[in-house]
Length: 196
Image (tube, helix red, strand yellow):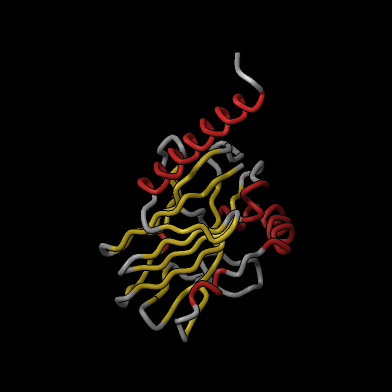
């Protein structure tokens, strides 16, 4: 007959084995990544550094919109187009960034999302401290807040930062592990996006 202490020890061992297996699987699926907080993740290799933060959206994703703050830099000069960034759902569906048109058509919900997310902004720029220059990429713009661009330029002396918006094909986001991917000109970075 097991004592309470023995049961706790066995439970603890099983839990540690499960977590170790999950961490190992995560390392294999997402190499070169490092957690930078509860909802911030960094990918870094010899070619690219890519950081994503999604503190608000991690726990508030019951609407059509998902907001991810991102930053990127590369060793070689590269022009990154908006179609180089995509989100892969847990069931393998690839989602492109939302269009400015769909973003603009749902502006009230977008404004509310940006307002609600403001207190939990993470400031991904702080992970790019060796980069003397930075610029914003603007794939999306609120009315009267500037123009949008379909690409941005990065290199070893320049990092770019901005917001990524994805639109749920089903009207809301399910819980699970998504994959945010940047892939362009032979450079690929992938980070997990954990929605709770």
